[in-house]
Image 1 (cartoon, helix red, strand yellow):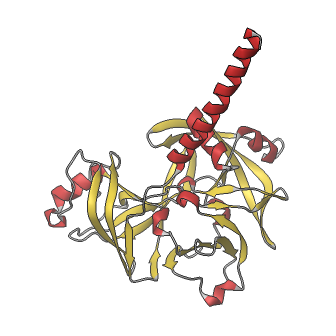
Image 2 (cartoon, helix red, strand yellow; image 1 turned 90 degrees about the vertical axis):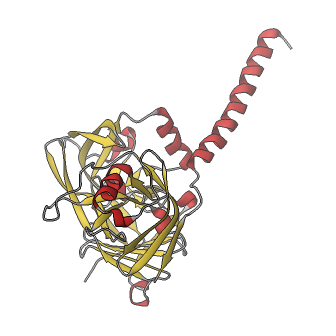
Image 3 (cartoon, one colour; image 1 turned 120 degrees about the vertical axis):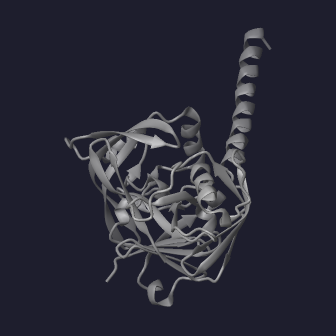
Length: 327
C-alpha cells in the first residue's frame, strides 16, 4: 500500500474507533445513577403551584411547577421543582444551610460544602418519601422567605426517580399531582396514548408533529416553553412572518439566549391533536449538549405549555403517555 493510502486508512480507522469510543462515552454520561428513593403510602395525591417569572420583558406565569413537601422538624412548607428532564432528585445547599440554622430540630445529615445528604425524608401529600442518598448542589436562595411572604421556599428538584415503575397523573387545569401504581379505570378508556420511553429515567414521547412521528423529551423543567428544538426545525415550524421574541435564559447558572416564535403546528396523540402554540431554539448550548441530544435520538424538548388545559398520564410501567381533555 502506498504511504499516502496508509495515512488515509489510518485516519479512517482512528475516526471510526474514536466514534465508537465517543458513542459509549456519551451513553455512559447519559445513564442515570441508581434510584435512591423509597415511597410509602401509595397512591400519593398533592396539589402543585406555578412559579411565575419573566423572560426578557415577557411575563411567564408557568415558569416552574412546584410541589409542596413537608420536612420533619421544619415549620415552613418547602417546595421541590418537579423536573421530568432530571433523572434524579437533588437538593440545593444554600436553603439547606439556612434551614439548619433556623430549625436545628431538622437534624439533617448535611455539612456545608458536602455534596450529599443521607436518609433524607419528606412528606408529599399523603405519602412519605425517603432518599438513602441525595445529591446537593450549590444553588438556591441563601435567605429563607418570611412566613407571610408570597415567595416559595424552594429546596431542590424532584426528578423522574419519583416515577420509576409507577404512573404519574398531572391535571394541569386543577393543579393536581398524583402518583400511583396503575391508571384509574375511569380514565383508561378516555385517554389518547402515544409510546413512552423511559431509558435512563428520561421521558421520551413519540407524538406526531406535522403529520410525522417525532421523538421528544418531555421536560417540565423547560415549562416556560412549548417546544425547544434545533434552529432548522424551529425555522420549519415557525409561522411565516411572525415576530420573534428573544430573551435571556438561565440554565444551571449559565446565560443563554432563547428565540421564540408563534407556530401553527399540531401535536398528534392517537385520535387527538393539540396546538403547539410556539416553538423556541436556544443559542449558547455547548458542543457536548448538542452531541448528547443527537445520540439520545431526541428531536427537541416538550414543555408543559401545550398541556395547559389537559390531564396527562405518564404510565412508566406500561410505556405509554396519555392525554385527556378534562370535563
